Length: 150
Image (tube, rainbow, N blue to C red):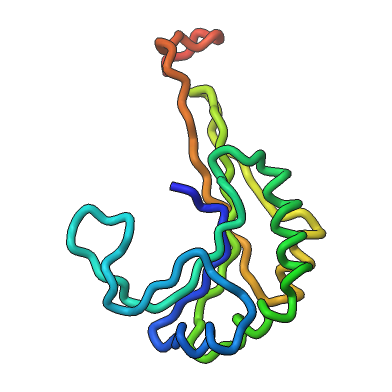
């Protein structure tokens, strides 16, 4: 699933009132009680919200996602501030997607926003979140070179 997006939602968020007063045009709008679009079973949204797709997080390189996000936050800062302050919009998140392959012996890693991205997120009041997709190698497992059991 593509997670390179900006979205806002809340139980009391009136998306129709927001859309009537904003120049922003979301890629997806849902209302509390609507069927979830990615669910194969009966599952309803507990909140109302809007989603803006910034690109394909599965194919756009991570650093390019940051540059696109900064440009979007800059270009729409006033409208995004209004979204953050909209009644009922309790959660406003900028999602970035990091996809990588790790060997079996990797035990951890960390991600964090660049100073520029963090500044622009703070400037409009958006919280950056990183979604990580790990691709494990498909080759057969090999013994640890140090001789220790895996």
